[in-house]
Length: 323
Ligand code: 13P
Picture (cartoon, rainbow, N blue to C red):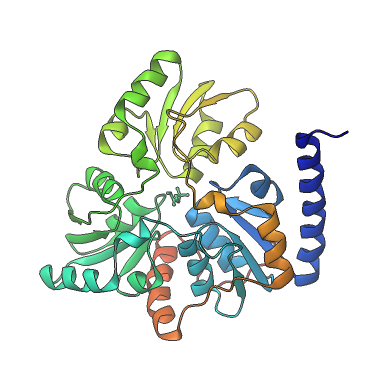
């Protein structure tokens, strides 16, 4: 008799084969965020941080993009690729941070601060992007804000990332929005202290969505993509990773001789984990769930994303092969 673990493995292997066949049939590319389940990252053609995924979406020559991430990420891919079919395997995979701002509330804020530039973190809806001057991700937020001529910047919706940007660009006046990531704020200062006590040689790497007390204890602050680069280049052998648990899959795979610790077991984004192999197969088989933005909103939101990609040096709309 096979045990549950064996039968789970067999089930997953069968699903992976099915996904591979369907991917060829549909001329699809699977892109996955670094917070996805291990087995999803394993089958992905491209995995990365929000910026890398937006860039990949611009470059792909596949007809269908299976986006393993959350709604705002798939929406960005669709905005940048109006001629491609962008599918999110689980429609309910949302982002509570993105839901902490509405276009109406942002319009009201703009009236309060006439002349301020609006910078929106990509963790926002297409409608909020459409109201913004430029988008940013956690890997380019500082670069984006520095590139603006305006001194006053309304930064939405993540207050922790906004505060971090303010610390790096003191000559700007950053007006914060009261939004936060419910996963990152679960890390408390004490969690870092406790983990560091247990592993005194470990470097602390934190995502800028963590609260300021946690960031103050970090040796390095960066996006999920930046963490891979930092760990690879660091001489340290141990790291405390203050971001969502999905990061450990690729960190461990790419750095077999190094050790990684989470400061708390609560660093799990339930929305990211909604996507399973079964749902990816379902998505490819039934061509669901399509993410589409109205032309009016799309054109305005695309301007904000294109401006961001221009700041990072990405060719806009370039359909390069290789993905
Ligand atoms: P990254 O851009 O660092 O991957 O962050 C995405 C995100 O949603 C963090 O919560």
